[in-house]
Length: 257
Image 1 (cartoon, rainbow, N blue to C red):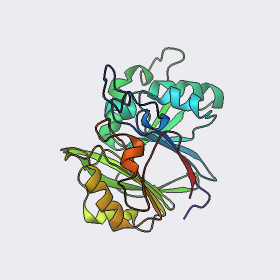
Image 2: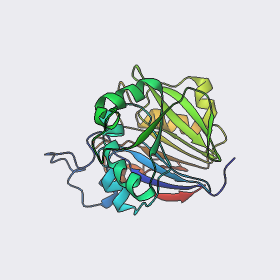
Image 3: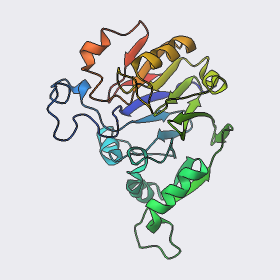
């Protein structure tokens, strides 16, 4: 297992983020910075690589906010735009690092990326378009330059999504269904991040109760909840309701595994 892995939560919000455009609810109007959420993404710094899971519309802002100078690979969970919409901004890393961005996802997601960013894959490319190397992954573990990556297969309603485990860290977002054998891939992780959209039941995301039950089954040293909507409530208030060892994640949260 990898050691000395640094985790940074780049975003912990839903597809709309928080505050939601034109919303006057008490969460969106909160002055607590922990209630202000960009679209969900996480950065994993290992001794070998700097890996980011998902590149949504806030990717550029997240890279600037965290002063990220190097990204070796992007792991994409699924093809919704709040997880892929920022891929054009890998151009900056192409220029600085003088190499293409390595992007890993299941085949259906890669097809969607090639369609949405078709100009990056044309035979005669316009100067300055993103340089992206696409890598198809399946529900089998793989190695990337010294890191062992374990995909975790789940469902976002009917849509397949991948979570990922690297060393003693596991991450799963935008899931509502997961088979027991996939859930067990996360067992033994010291830190686990899982999605919890809101308190009420939802058809394509775990709600708060479901996410807590999963974390209590897996028993990590620390569990964090991400992909949080403004319907969840304010950070300080919801935090008081959570069991020991389980916390709401927030943008900019950092820890070491």
